[in-house]
Length: 358
Ligand code: NAD
Ligand code: IPM
Ligand code: MN
Image (tube, rainbow, N blue to C red; front, side, top):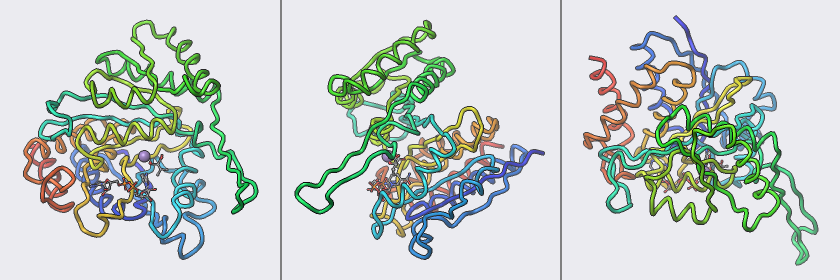
């Protein structure tokens, strides 16, 4: 029996509420599909920072490296500046482990109401591939003359040919594997950003030549936002820079019902270091501690982790159970218009996993 070693970082806020739920689903399907999961929990995050002045220990990446995968909740605490928390934990892991392809599916499940009039379950099914190691998130910059009228702040978006080409290639390969509309939509702002984004467009065109079986489309990010509202059903695979991918995926989560349903895989496709799986959402301080956070995004992220580890059957069990609970509509958290709780939705998914297994 194979056993997967998973590092669990629940983090802050609702991260601590949804992760036990997602881990319970993981344990349940592992038992049914006949493999082991050995979990190690790391109490890193904002409490750790307040106690010790660091979000995670200095050697955290060395500690995490031997694991098969990292299962992550969320970080962010109103008492600490967000760039301290995120640059102290999540972003260094994405970069340090070369998790360059951030894969964020956007699926409108049957039983879920989209805020877009007339869209029903099954209508929306695309994936955003977000560049995850450089671009606008490259920590290159600086400042001068703090707290004076002359203050200067610079943050340099950094695009390399290596980084741009590999993520675009990943998107084309994914469109092939999905074998749906066989379409890759590149999203840039090359009308305004004549260096970085015009460069991205050139790389996109060059890579596309290697995929004559895949159709292509290039959109400016402002128009892409409009089209995600106007014609979301047309998309298949979208590929975008770090920042644009971030923005597009809160929007894609909203049109498919809720951030509470949107999973994310931060992949190191070469498998030279562990990949990290998490919900798209953050620590949601506005609902933290109330027991009403939707655990389904984290559960679906767990399914993506199982799929990446090669446990397709177990991944399918989680996804099918989530689909079933959504279609049934009896255990529904408030973000989806219900009055259910993290607990009731988790119980419903766990029951369904057993029922579907017969
Ligand atoms: P957020 O994603 O935490 O919340 C946005 C809104 O969506 C809130 O109204 C929240 O209640 C709701 N929501 C999010 N997840 C939900 C769930 N599972 N169930 C029900 N409702 C849910 O974004 P924010 O409010 O902009 O950020 C809060 C903190 O989280 C900040 O510190 C931010 O930096 C951080 N953040 C962290 C991550 C991460 O760790 N990956 C991602 C995004 C934001
Ligand atoms: C996400 C989050 C992070 C990002 C933040 C918290 C740094 O919004 O995973 O979407 O922008 O990558
Ligand atoms: Mn985001």
